[in-house]
Amino acid sequence: MKKEDLIDKYLQHRLTSVEKLKFEELFKNDIDFKKEVTFHINLKKAVKNDDDKVFRNLISNLELKVRKPKHLYTKWLAAASIILLLGLTYFLTLEKKASTQELFASYFEPYRNVIQPLERNGNQQNEKEIAFMAYDHGEYEKAILLFSKLHTTTKEPYYLFYKANALLKLERAKEAVPLLLEHLKTKDTLTEKSHWYLAMAYLKLDDKINAKLSLKKVLIEGKYKTKEAKKLLKRFK
Amino acid sequence: MKKEHIKVLLNSNSKEISNLYYENRDAFFNFGKKYGLDYDDLSDIYQEAFIALRKHALTGKLNSVKSSLKTYLFGICKFMIFDLLKERSKNASYDPSIHVKHDIIEPVFFESDNKVLTIEQQLLKTHFKKLGKKCQIVLTLFYSRGLTIDEIVEHTDYTNSGVVRSQKSRCLKRLKEMIKS
Image (cartoon, rainbow over all chains, first blue to last red; front, side, top):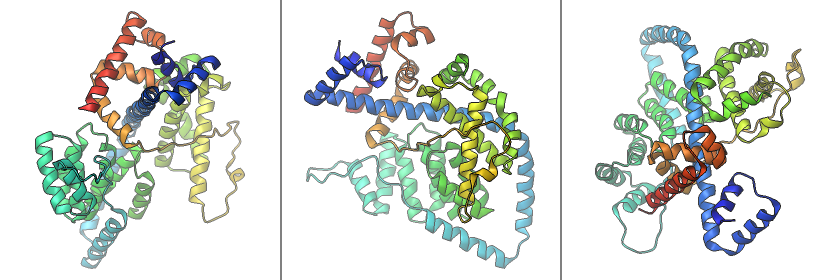
């Protein structure tokens, strides 16, 4: 049996006991075979993750379809609440502002660098490495400049995401919002995290309505910071 | 469980999934109301339980299930309801038996997996999304749905297993090239 077929059968749990022995022997002694198997295992996880996400979106769209009437009703309620809120006193407004700022401070932290692992090998670094090193070292101004430049040249969506994170860290939430909205339109793997950071940006801007909407989207996605989003939503009630 | 229901879950065709999803939704809301949960909670639980049901189909767990799809799905829902009630009454001592209503639905254990992808896996996912539609379909059927090459021939317009095999190899080659560049 070809090595390729052995790997295919392994991935689908269809190896016979004889084939299993052969597989284990190759995995132990053949470095290239081991490398190939690892590639396929990783690919399986990546493809599964994508397939699950597509299915999750399908289900949340089905649910949203039947929830529409309720949404319209809640929209009217939300509109009525805004009018009520506008009528609140100066004192209450001040307190509200303080609390959203507190929430931002306790919930926000820049997303870790998963794009460019830092290697200190002493060789000459390229711009991407310098940008992410600046980000990792908290030199956000420098990172922002480099991310902008790199996004213009490469069009890689993740630069939008990291630039927005750096801006949020520098409390420049207003500039972070359009970047995150643009990032959400892309097919980047980090987009499942963007709703959370968008919620953080709205929180910083004291825009509770949009912060709540973004947090609800975090729950629909169900992948990242769902527990935190649930907690934060409760704080808004 | 009916084979055709498992097939619908495995194929994940949006029209068929939509029918199956709505078929039991109203009944679940009536069932769930007994536990004192509000509309939003029930809606979240039903979605999550349906996603879990598909995961059980993909892992082959449903093949040995004797009960109907509805009973099994409600079993997952019930497990999730208990979990939620437990979480909400963390400060008070919780006894699940107080919530067991007069029904025959057994809770079905469900382990949530929110595993974050490693850097390599994220990179693979990014490049996978850049592949053509044909590649994405073949690789999804093989890696995520667990279909064999022959089963892929049955489910698609490919005429024979040789064509699927070479399509799959081309896609993998392209993916490896993308990662190297």
